[in-house]
Length: 344
Image (spheres, rainbow, N blue to C red):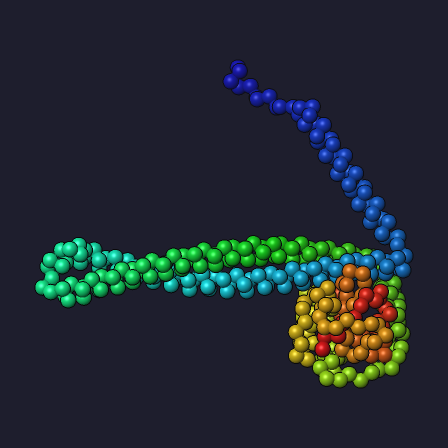
């Protein structure tokens, strides 16, 4: 019977089938492409791996400085927003007090009623008594006018403060979004560098590390140390004390640093407040030429001003290089020189 028949299974329409086939082909193509990329990277020579890793780390450092800048802007926006919210709360209290005073005055007038001036004169036992009452009424009217004006002022100020707070909140959210985006970029670039290094054998990684140390150490030995003085000596001393501490992106110490975090912390120990990022630190203090460098100067690298170290004399600096490399000495010739600044 018809009631006992199994319902027909619906077959795929031609468009659905085509879509499924296309999806399968796309997935196969993507997998093939990724396999191809992985296969190509797998056959990089150790020297090519080092160059590619350096590139990823430079890109990560650029993103780190952008992250630091966005985070700093978010911090400032948060502080300004908190201050505006406190101000709005205080102004709301004052507005409510003014409204309550105005309401109490209006209620008192309602209870006492109002009497026409002619009738007041008629009811007065003497002209002097009438004039005294008229003066009191006038003063009461002046007080009411002042209260109304005060309420209006408080309302206008409160609207202004709330508008400023809304602007600060919008700026805070933009900075937080930017910081999150730059953080993802940093993580992606560092992960890509780690994946490349993981494909090397232990012996290849050891040789790469030794070559990097020899390159830095050989160049760092050039020149004679120049003694630092004043605040610069305190900043240099701090940098020496940080040697061996890990690179931690976004960190300003005391247990780890990124490049601009180290220079900021070193000069903070000398009583000088530096901005947070490389591209703002280069504008702090007086710009100096490379042949005029003195200990304590900030030395910047790459066209995007994405790396900074603190000069210690003799052509050397102390800097936080990149993840996996602790704070150490290096030559200022190790990277493309971009400029220098003297904070104090």
